[in-house]
Image (cartoon, rainbow, N blue to C red; front, side):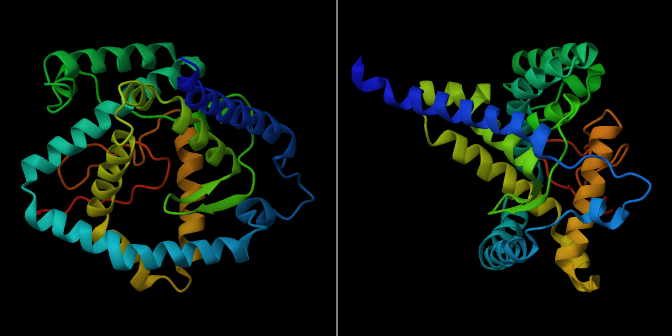
Length: 278
């Protein structure tokens, strides 16, 4: 029994550090600007820009060499029905943590809808492979611990570009850390000695995300004078919309190439567009 204690202890220690960091954000995060302050400082709030640009460049190189080619192959080789199944399963696995965050945010009706959606798609939709709940009036919605911290009054803090994960901020980075430790699905995988499954899950979500944004991100790169600044502004506007509107759909009423509403973590912008005939 003594040999099994270190791993849970490390996870609990990581969770404690994450929560402590989140609490510090309420003090360290900048307050809303007053009338006499320059709004540009609040809009961009990027004191780590040189480091962020370096990480952004590394992410772009990895995307060019690995992720984008993989997404192209994924779209060309994998049938549409299989891609939809992968997306449905990824969304389904996000629901337990979504439920926890909705309860923490005091969103009682939404948490009840999320619980019903999870139950229906687990029982009738073959563990989420088919989205039966959508037709029953329970559309997919997502939220995250960064949104929960925002609901508790924690400011977003400086802009950050995370390795691989991409655009974020201090508050949402703390949220990702908590999610990595406390997501019920990943905790279940680890307890079942399936330590590789969280990585498989994250990889499937990232590949699906990149495939659905192939053309849009290509357009952004081709038409942006400063791609880094463009993504920074777009991310912050989108994140503010997600939190302030009370809904986590990335484009309210929007549809992706498969006809599904945008919505599921990771908390980063989803730029997919509806492409007729695709």
